[in-house]
Image 1 (cartoon, rainbow, N blue to C red):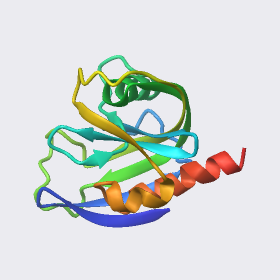
Image 2: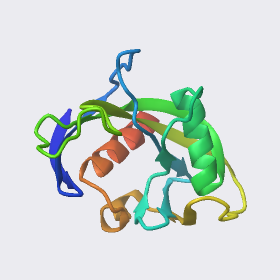
Image 3: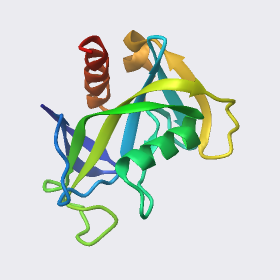
Length: 165
């Protein structure tokens, strides 16, 4: 488990990576994310008005987290594969003085992460918010990904998961 404090649009937010954390019906999932791996390389997508990151997004009404994961990865990166749950980031706004109760996000929410072993890499059609995709050596990730340090910790867990199979 690792905790970091980040500044999201002037909001102080505590993020804690919880490997193998078991989500239950009381956990509010705010988004899902995948570390997509093929031929020992990691997929990153560039989303309009954001930098490079792992594919992912919000769950639509009636979707499970796994269904949302497959949909988001296809929409943002045009890949398909098998997923394995890794754990979740707990997003905690208790120290966020700008938090709006009853707003878009809960006081404590969760972002589940999955490892996707890519089986199909389809033509990149740019029909959704993704503008490009790149395949990156894991050692290059800290120099490319536009995110907090938990992103590389979760990548390490995804890679370790593969080597433990």
